[in-house]
Structures are given as structure tokens and as C-alpha cells.
Length: 290
Image 1 (cartoon, rainbow, N blue to C red):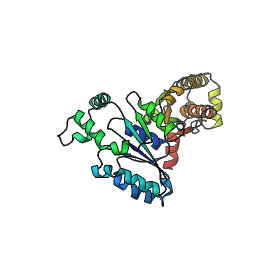
Image 2 (cartoon, rainbow, N blue to C red):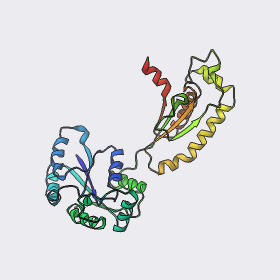
Image 3 (cartoon, one colour):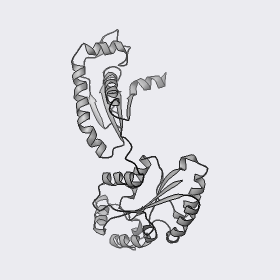
Image 4 (cartoon, one colour):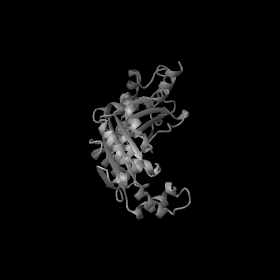
């Protein structure tokens, strides 16, 4: 079992680091009590999906568990667990600014006995047992969330980020734009096979409909414009550590025009991008309901 323990002061980026590992296939647990690390390792012996686990541990833990953390580490190592402790920190000024901008309460101010600055200092004292055992300490003062995720993938998981999944999804505007859409292209201006009685019952997957679209230059022009836009901006999306990009192509009913364009785009980008999916919402909905 490989166990990555993410710790650090609140506001230093623990959640972003944990989510980065989760996206890389780790079983992620937020704010696990330190006293449960040994039972977690025992459970991992009987569950194959717990071979790579990432947990975050912070000052909300009981102080006695944090004090005993070195002993817990020794027991885990003796059980054959590969433990990697990552400690995140940032200067006090930056942490104060982050709490002010998000308007979140610091965990140690909940009793009303400590000010925010006092809680930040007190938290460092409580987490010293973990900080002293860290194999990797990161100062996130000047790191963006994307830079932190990339660093975690490279230094902790020892791999680059997983390829961004590019999804092309057709849909019908009359049933609403997909809620998970990142980019939406309206192709209702294209010639509509619906008005040809021979094609009305077919879909954009059928060769007869493809032949219909080839009679006009507009579908190819639309394809080229969408393709060029995605080619230009896809690297920027990938640089921002997006794990999933949903490109939605819409026509009136989601049966002909959008299906055809989504298929053409999916086929084109699958030749140059490692993770491409194509989905037709309204066609799948019909299959589900029959």
C-alpha cells in the first residue's frame, strides 16, 4: 500500500493537493483522524482498490493523536506501508489574505478564544510533529492552484497529470443545454434534414444524412471553424489542469445536425488527442426510454 499524507496549515492548499491525487487515481480521504491510519492500513490488505491512498490530516485532529504521529509512522512502516508525508505551508500574510478573500473561518477560531492570526500561529505548533517527518515540504505562497496540482503530480505521484478528457456531446436546444457544458456551439443555422421526409426518421449517424450535409458547404465551414477554435485553445485548457472538457454541439432536436458535427469532431480529434469521447444525449435518451 502506498499512503500519501497531506498536511499543513489551513489555507495552504491541502484540498487542492488531495484533489490532484484523487484525479490521478488515489483513494482520497479528507481530514482523517490520525488514530485511524493503522486501521486504514489493515483494511487495505483486504481491499484491492486501496493500494494507493491519499489522506489529509490537519489541526482538527486530536492533539494527542498528532503528538503520537511519529509512533504511528513507525507502525505503518513496520507493516510494510510506503508512507510519504507532504507538508504544505505559506507565510502568515498570505494565509490571512486567503481567509479574508474566501471569508471562511479558521478551524481553531471556532471556540472564539483565538484571533485568526493567533490561530494560524497555533496551528503551526500543533502540526510540528507532521512537519518534522515530511519528505516533501512545499511553500505555496507564490504557487497558483494549477502550479500546485502540477507539482503534486510530478513530485508525489511521480507522473505527469492524466490526459485531459475531451468530450463532444450533441444535444437538442428544445430540451435544454447540458449542465456540464464547458463550450457550446449552436449549429441550428445549418441545413436541416428534418424537412426531407426521407431523412426525418434517420440520425446524423446515418450515411444518407452525411450525404445530405455534403451537398452544402456550410457544414464543412462550421466544422472547420469549431475545429480551429478548439485546436487553438485546447492547450490553454490543458495548462490550467482541466481533467475534463465538455464541448456541446446543439441543434433543435439533437438528432441530425448536432449529431453529425459531434461525430466529425470526435473522429478528427481522436487522431491527435489521447482521450476523446463522443456522446449523443438525445439519441441515448431515446434508447433508454425504449
